[in-house]
Amino acid sequence: MDWDNARIFLGIYRAGTLRGAAAQLDIDQATVGRRLAAMEKSLNARLFLRTPAGYVATPAGETAARSAELMEEAAHRLQREMQGIDNRLSGTVRVTTTDTMAVHFVMNAMALLHERHPEIQVALSIGTQLTSLTRREADLAVRTARPSSPDLISRHLARRTAGLYATADYLKQRGMPVPGSGFEGHDIVVYEAAVAPRHSEKLAGEPVHNARVAMTVNTGLMLLLAAKSGLGIAELPTHLADPDPNLQRIWPEREHHYDTWLVMHGDLNRSARVRAVADAIVESVPGMSPE
Image 1 (spheres, one colour):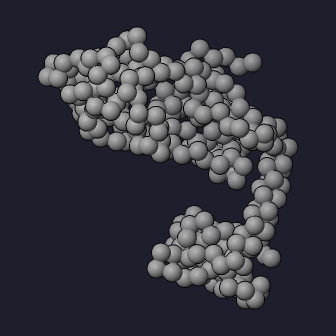
Image 2 (cartoon, one colour; image 1 turned 45 degrees about the vertical axis):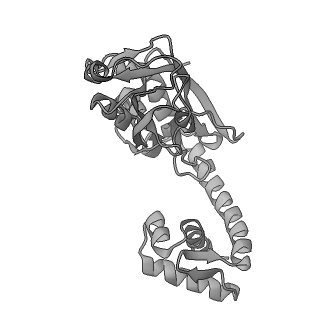
């Protein structure tokens, strides 16, 4: 099985469409179709059923996917190992984090890195989904969840606190929520369930069953902006919300604690450029210093 064809096959298998695979792989759709046809011809098997909902793997396709994923794993391992012994302080490092952590300290880290090592180019990706470091979708991740994979190295960066906030105008109109009332008579702004499932049940330990959900969002900065716009009560990081004059803390004794982690694949721990980026991130976390 040719690896170039196999990786395109995996793109179709995961995306479900030729267009989706083309977008993932940054190639044109016609090339994807030609490579799939070539692979089916070389294997003498039909790998997908073309349905109105997209491309669905046949039994032969499922078997091919397992083999192709082993090829992908081997290719990524080779790439990581070669990068891991690279001592050059130049090249690209892929970093993924959330927008709130980018604003709070990651962007400062990137400025520090650029000052020290201008030949290192950072590809920064912002999102709440857990990007796969094993598949080399990123080299470094700053996350609020510690990974369980034994292939990944994680370093604890900080423990943060979140509390409840709303604007003074909102509280003047609606009054303070009553503890134990489940936010009865109040509007709340929360994360989408896919981002923070607990928000559908509690905010800072208070059940939300009597609240009206005014908006759901998928990023921290949008949550902050929605609260500042007076849409309702939100659970926000205290280090971002406390300094904001537009927000007022509700029930200061109610808190939610969470941790932040720096994560990389173990094979990249020896890469000079990846280590340089990691060091800059660690140095830029308020209260942290390199070991």
